[in-house]
Length: 110
Length: 111
Image (cartoon, rainbow over all chains, first blue to last red; front, side, top):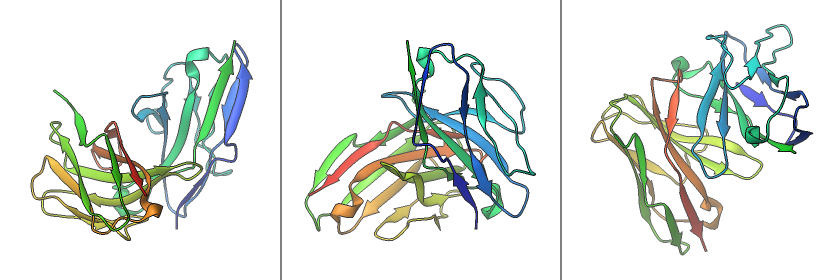
């Protein structure tokens, strides 16, 4: 069975502070990992995926297979980063479905 | 080009009533999904479809049925609504799990 764990329900930081949203996964094969974001009153949307190794809106995430982690990081948080962030894994069902974590709410205060 | 739309946006049902939620897409994607979002539970997959005429169960399929008669539409049905089905329902479409595009959500309350 595959599982995604986001240990923090809420992360509150001040503007300009570094941010790290934690994501750990459990999967026996080779997973694909994603971060999705949901801003207030907006649709859930893809933020980034590990296979593309790109930085979106200043966020990066590195897949650490040894620690089975895919933490999301940003060196300097902005108020507009406040949102719900979901880590997701694809591996089973022929990589046709996603398993989401429970989400972490990021609040960035001025 | 509307992308992914969901109908209705809000609905209140009494226990035991039935309803159908419609997800429509104009993106021509094969894969379509229905999720429910509950506080503290994240998104959980109810059912999904990998193409017209196909459906498969997700993590929490009980109490729901789905149909994909046309490629662009994916219907989610509740035959006998229960208070435990109070939730926000999201439809998504995509290229398998590579990237999913979400609809705006349907907020359902069962009293």
